[in-house]
Amino acid sequence: MLEELPFVSVPLKAAERARKALSDAGALAPAPARRAAERLLVPVLDADNAVDILSNIGVFANTGIGRFVIREAEKRIPYDLIGEIAIVRDCGEEEANEVLKRHKKVRTVYCTSGIDGPFRTPELTLLAGPDVPVTLVRESGFDMEVDVKNAYYSPRLATERERVTALMADCESALDMFCGVGPFSLHMARNGCDVFAVDINEVAVLLARRNAKNNDLDERITTIVGDSHNAVPALARRGMKVDRIVMNHPTGALEFLDDALGVIDQGTIHLYLMVAQESAQIIDEAMNTILFERNFQISKHKVRSVSPAVDQMCYDIVLS
Ligand SMILES: C[S@@+](CC[C@H](N)C(=O)[O-])C[C@H]1O[C@@H](n2cnc3c(N)ncnc32)[C@H](O)[C@@H]1O
Image (cartoon, rainbow, N blue to C red; front, side, top):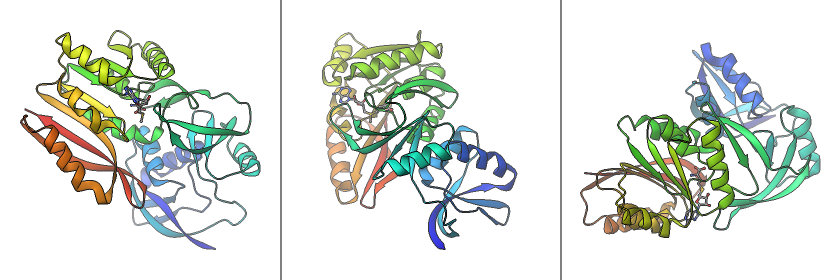
């Protein structure tokens, strides 16, 4: 049976490594890859996720959608793999047990009904395996402890974290305004930045602190539990200035831009937002209004599509 599937295209010389990494992560679609000139087109369950997995092993892939022959015996079960935990959508116990059978690394399968609430944590129902939401993930050479029930973490931004870090050759101090379990903070600290990492969720900050220590970066990362509306102005009152700010709170970051401006004179803010295509212009105007008194340039790019009408965008705001 022919079906349209997302694929990643990788150079032939990296094909074996790429296929193994995607297979270990449970990201392959049940259809054979095919060759196109000097590249292999590998059908996957989720192209963005596959690109992130490959970038972690140094393989840079293009993406596309193509028609592939589906192996009928294997039903497609899309899921996110976070350490030893698989998170599925709209599935029952039968599919969960199938995931356990197909992927030796997975010990627990949860079903999510979406991310919600101030901590941006998912509503999870246990489908298979022990109800243990804590697991270790490896991202870009970091070992991170995450708790999929009680603190936000997504492997989907790994490529974006690499991009932001690559821009930071001259960074001295940074603020991670919504740090979660600390992935952006770890990247910035490894690059030589002193980082203030703030989050309102105590569990997330506990894990961010532990992750900083376990990756020998605790001397560079200061963690703060608090609401950034209060914690960041408090840092400003102490005269703190940074040259980078990461604002990864895609449903609320814009409301905090004013607070961020209090701790940065010159430098760059990386602000992430979910943007409905029909509201893109309104967001641009709101940003221009908030930044009115500053010298600034904004460049923006799409991080990923969240749905046909909504994109996750990153705004790089350079203040001079
Ligand atoms: C989308 S997550 C991003 C986490 C992390 N930066 C990452 O990339 O994995 C957003 C985070 O913002 C935190 N948050 C929400 N409201 C906040 C506030 N008012 N002040 C500080 N943190 C907040 C949530 O607890 C959550 O961890």
